[in-house]
Image 1 (cartoon, rainbow, N blue to C red):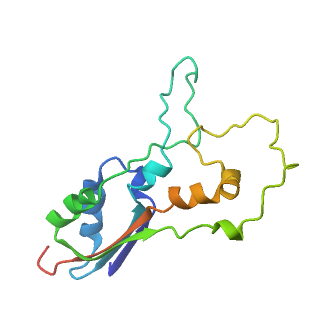
Image 2: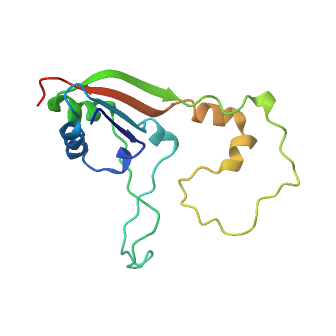
Image 3: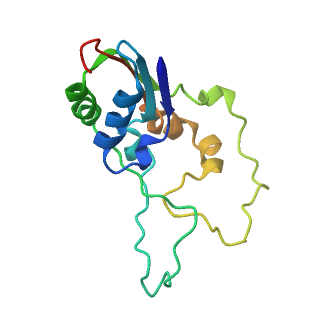
Length: 159
């Protein structure tokens, strides 16, 4: 392959080494690998709930829709890639722009009362309605890198 692109998937892979080994295996010498993934700093803003399947409170059936996520330091990507002859061409830590400035957000409507229906979402998900009710806190909380994008190139002599 001349190029391999993997976007926002490696956060769900426990061990990066076999995945990067496969990327290197299918790339031709001089081929390019572009990987984007959730940035480790995002874990502080959006922690991932951990669930144990099979406990009395969850029953014995697997929970649907919840995948384990692995938030890694950037050095883990390097440790998986460099021994395979993948060379870093570029690395970008994309920072979420401010969602809204306080003056851009209309005041909260006092008649806008949240639904009394139970919330089925895990406790760690972001309550999106609060993003517009507390714009100053939102701007601070989301002022972290949210995605890392790597551009690697397989060295010509790596085969």
